[in-house]
Image 1 (cartoon, rainbow, N blue to C red):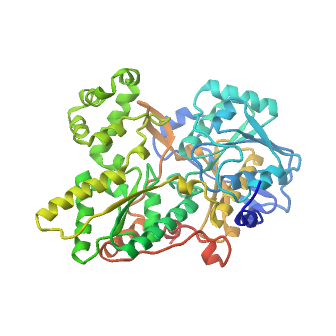
Image 2 (image 1 turned 90 degrees about the vertical axis):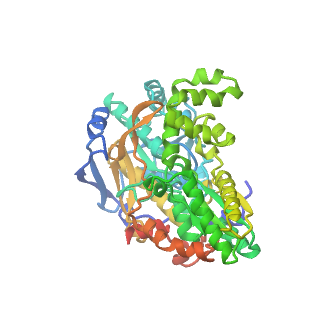
Image 3 (image 1 turned 180 degrees about the vertical axis):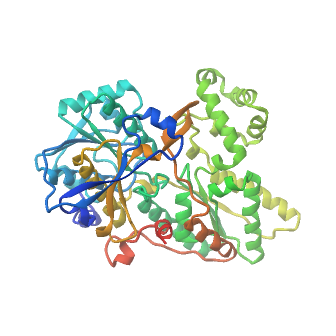
Length: 547
């Protein structure tokens, strides 16, 4: 395979490991844990894996010697930069425990596990993928592991290959599935450990012991580079407003981090919209007011950052979508039989009065997008809703009204962008390359420690990598009960942007200044070679959270 100059140079990069993982380790138990909410319900569902203690590793001799391990690995859900390094770290970890250890990758996600599609990952294969982006080493998929038949079918191939531990690399839903799988295998004494690794560029899988999910650092740096480029163009031509939608369905961590890195004219944080009980019209008014004020100062250009999940955080829209999800989950076949032209009226007729009014008020295109195919969890696919176009269209309409009232004197020319897939498979930053390698190596140590139902945890991430703390936390500790497909299910609680947190407060203190003038920052591309302050810095979110 032909490689670029950067690929060749990156292949030689040796990720940094926490010092505690460089020799023999022992697992030290901390306090017992409980779920973040709904303790009684979660405990009842996970009697064998609930209430386990936190773990951290301490040095114990010079070698990490043990019996050979046969381990399986699954990449689950959307791609995130660094996944290959998690697998590389896992491979190196089990080989360090015993050179006879073997690693098997299940192909195209959990579906490969159920369908017995796999390959052995050997040193030559692993070496091709070190420090690279993407999940193409074994592929990924979104099959949900939630049925007993799937667990039993998967167990057949585990037994056949002599696999005694399974590592699932995924986001909150994938790690929820890992917890359910761990509980089932423990309950039937299957002799299989299940370990999770925290992946999602959205940044919403975190707590005190999982400080960030992998891929968030790289993805936000990629988006910030492109936003910076757009802002440089914007400041050069001085005639466009760029409405930029960013990935982040359930939380606005990406939008907030990119705002801190680039200082746009305006940035919406969904969690603030919800806390202030704002309507769509109020958001439009805020943006239009900023644009009118800038026009009065002779500036008819700027950038507006929009989180992909904004629609679901507007209280009236959130109530509508929740009822819509339930309605379409329960009446899927009946709805599918309704002719295309009658579907809008069908929905209006079957919604409660308030939600029917909100739905009827939406433009035809947006209303249609809300009733499109659901995602695997039965929810509206908000990434298909062109929020950036919806907002710019409504802002344009509002500015025309303001012009007629003599409150606006400028010219409004909107441009639209959605940055999502551009950041998911980038070559990992040095931070993500190191963090992911440590997560994988640490997972090997958790397997050697004999635990199951744990998530690999590496923390103190603003310190040099050698000082990072390694260990594990029970996945049940992160869970609560939520409504899915019309039923209450155990899931990992998503971590939203905290409005009392330092990252948001830093943004809130500066945004009025950004709205008035040209305060753009141009971060430039990710740097892999050079001084540490340029190459190894974590996100501003992580730095502010630690200050």
